[in-house]
Image (cartoon, rainbow, N blue to C red; front, top):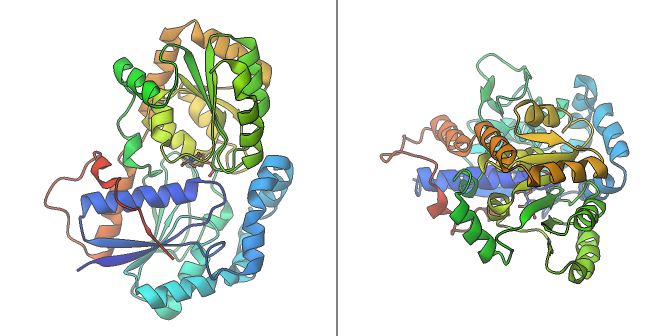
Length: 400
Ligand code: UDP
């Protein structure tokens, strides 16, 4: 029998959906035919409340244009009391789409990948699906916001890098796994020949030092000025900008690409992030947890240029302390660091090794095993593992 799992996500940034996708892929690969993950976005998807849609729609512009304002909201709500008020007022508007999905799909478990979807999962579980366990998958790395703390979740899956006690009843405690990444990231650092082949397949020069600039799903963090500074300063460095959902950034840089003699490549929201990460010499950009988790699985060195106040504050120390990257908050320091690294391949190799050491490529499979255990699906006859790439071609999730 196939067990339906209801996955709750929201598109504030790209990390929550990517984590859900990774777990769905691991379930498909490790337990063929045993699970049917169904995706629901109760904050911005079909049937969601207009006020929640408007608020989640403001996330991208606010972190791009006024990260300090986002920081004030984040810190203002980062208390048990304010999180509780948020859960019992505004977030009750997320109940309807979750209730509809539960009524329609009768899930064996509800899995929440977003801090603002867990409370609806618990309320609807209590009234409509008392036997369905609720599992929270925390997608942040180090600093964990109070809204993730749903004491009544049956399990809270937290990356081992986070020093955080979720509370809740005994037996419903934290499980240290994560963060989940898709199989494409699990292959580790590429060998030189593989990197060259990847670059060719992406239309990039094989020999130039290559900097990949990203700003998460929303394309935030001052990417344009950094890209042009690198291109101006060096005439033998290639730059790839992944602008995510930031159309204005994409259009602005794409219109300039011709000026740089093929050294600037601009893409919008890509679905082959592993290829870009694996062929780059370094990644430069915002210290997003998803990006760090994926880059470390690929052994990509990280030059962290910015972070969102609060939720990404601890990520820089996590990476720099492990020797997997450097903190380069100003354009000048970024340029200086690239100047040093491109003349010192041994230093890049050391960072690559340190980066790969931080990666947790098996996390999605471990979460799949936890979910299987919770809903009583027996362990697979064939060993599970990291080579889930065969599962990638199939559509990832059933959306609502
Ligand atoms: N991402 C992607 N394509 C893009 C840009 C980003 O698939 O063009 C994904 C990226 O692989 C990662 C997520 O979006 O999984 C970004 O997550 P992160 O936590 O770094 O930042 P967020 O966007 O959530 O702030």
